[in-house]
Length: 291
Length: 49
Image (cartoon, rainbow over all chains, first blue to last red; front, side):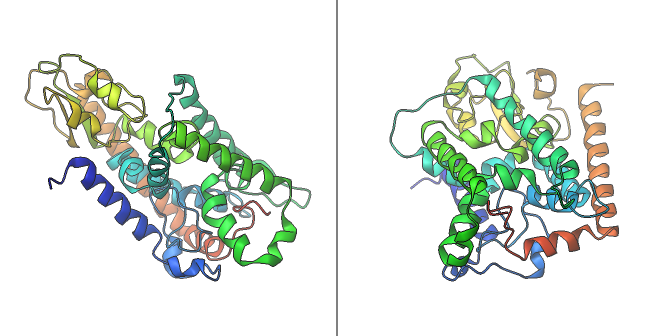
């Protein structure tokens, strides 16, 4: 059997899922890992209240610091995301994010599939600005305590990976259930249905981490090039793209998760991806000028 | 300045800024804050807070 690019990617996704969540035994009694690795961030979205999680979620870490007295911004986690993003861009989404893998598996459920209008991809930037950066730094309750707004009101990864397993093993916490949990469950159900019907629905519309990595896709060292001398503009790359990008027109789109399906689909091998710092010596127009 | 050089400069600036942010965060104890938060069940994170 030939090991295709897609199979290699799936192997890396599963390995990254296992590396991010090695403590599967904790699901049995609802404990969470309490070791020192939890001070380090995971590159992908993975709730640190998930019993199996080994690392801190970078979005949760940013908000945890912003909520602390004397702090307004989580610079440690933000710096980590910027450093990873300027090297890899959305390779993290395509290869390393546990929630990304889950969305791809959900999308394999056989149902009619749909595409979202392009404007919806901008919602995630609003979520990043308001729920991750602004509200955790300024919004306090009556006692003056600030809270992680994205985790508290939106994050379906937290509800699925943390909320449901913890509630199933800690019946004493069920008395705390209220309107916020109802809201979060509604969002989780909407995201699950969305991901069955629309490829990577959460990544496209809601993920604040994807928003940061997407902006860095424009300048990341890992990038894609189009050799326009070879490209026949057949559109096969765009039709197969799970993120509804158009690689032959904008190879370093903020939506591209670097899955590489377009590279495999290209009949003229005009798309390439890799770590690149120098201009290619080809007569094609490279991604730098195509952006 | 060609596009590649401009992009390389942007990459270096972002990377250095990221390293500076990490270093500053470590110097003011942010990893300890993250650790304290991450080793307990975060009730807000799971929708109970």
